[in-house]
Length: 381
Image: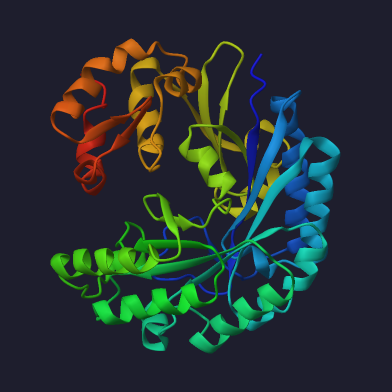
């Protein structure tokens, strides 16, 4: 029996406005928006998911979107109450809510804290008004500052700030200025990632002019140096002070199990035989609400076959600065570590990986060219 702890992802799909760079399953708040009906659907969905994780302990919850902070605190409380009733919840559970700095959402922070949310992830993206306009964000820099202050005043001791770099017409100095501004709040966690033009986005169809690759590289290095004064990088795009790492995201990167509820939510579960299955829910909110709580709510599933597991595992574990041990690899995949030993030897020889005691970690070169490192674990045809 798999008794390992697991995580829960809850997807709330609506936004006030769809950002032109966003490829997540998010929808502008229009005629299909029914907060109460959606909460009912989530609770129905949870009842079917709970059967899959009996005798296991829930260690983290992440409420993402979309813009989950659009929902009232009463709605979020209903969802969390159902979680407490239906699942075995760890006493020290981490509960993260993604929030938009828009004024209407920030006004709810105190209520969110009172109902048990103990970590906020605020989508600032930039403190530069011109860049926020380019990104299609509905908030300005003044609202971003206000939201962070309100979160701290509400008593949140764990706050993540999302920042992007490589923005249209952004200079290195402007990117570093964003970092300085964020660090001054001493929230002790920062997500810092590059703007990419993903398929099925407005930016992909009508691409803006981005800084040259060399400029973006220098921008990233300059920002990382600045961040390193206060925070330690523990993942490709995540930085934190001691004991402030996102436990939910670490579970993903350590190839842990998780269940997902909500439109388009994904889950990954390991059964008693060691078989790993990935699954996802229907993406359209209207379809999801119609079928939630029934097998028809599942949009699809995929059983991960054995020769795909090394790549699947490394795609997550090598994002972490701490890397992995052979025991961790075997525990999470059910495979004998000997099957990856030749590949590890090759990567050690190429100086893309290094061995620190029992931990295999990326070298600086392996880290900077992570896709090239990961390709070595792809199954041979």
